[in-house]
Length: 200
Length: 211
Image 1 (tube, rainbow over the protein chains, first blue to last red):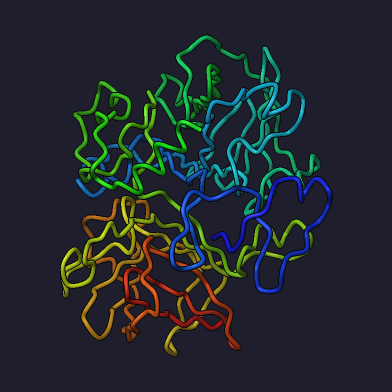
Image 2: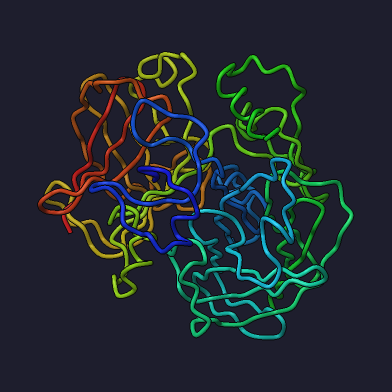
């Protein structure tokens, strides 16, 4: 995926040009393979609801249909102050790294009482000390939040923040089952936030 | 930098890392523990919810780096194809014929089955491949690979259901000029579309798409 690595500041200065045949990306890399496609420092990962659905499926143990899948990249705290410093309060964050975080619903669901039709969406968050604004946006297959367009929002929901947990080094998203459906749990550093997703 | 050092150390010293394995969080009580492949979690990576995979996931688009291109060209339209796969690393092992046995199914990656999504119909070896999502797997042989597109999406990569095979293509393999440590999938533009390059160790293969 990554042909080259450049600093995030390149975007800040609006320099999007790159050497011919390569492209600008904005994370450093952890290792250099002989080919020009090193691993990301913030590796991509996937989470399902029901949890571990692909494993259940090949074991014929998937009792319920697939409801949601999230694809995101996992930056590391790496001894930095995350919220309020690395991720500035009040600004739109891509809820991960690299490509914007994608959530796909395989059936209609409800968030904050509003219908979310089956399909693919991009998630963003505006982080503040006591609450996050979680944004469900209709522009998919996009990079970061650099071109975030509020006009393409499906909905915004304010979520309280839980603090004080043992710090989590790698940003983590996962689903947990609830009586109404599922929670998407978002956790990084000492902060945890929960997005309730209802099936009815 | 602690985590980065651990990551790097693990990549360098490979399986020799002595830190205790940290398991991912407990499965939900309703389910028995799920046996995934062993050794798929990066050791020493403390995370109470979901540990980092030893073979991290990655994504490849065609057009190449489509999400970045879209930032400067918002009217770019849909991508043509996207592959999501996990990237095992060689770790001084002999891959083809040893780790991956000739004639047996290989998931073209690690962990979940490798997924390809075509956003419009494509042509491979004069056969029309309908738009949509598929999983991909491979039957490697010394001189050629059979690449299979299968409909059993959202499945783990260890057990393929051949009854759901949709397309099979035999492609030649080439000797790579340099060893590839991390299994790699990437699209390369051609006159008529793109080659999906598949490379690991000293072997590479190309699956040609026309759009």
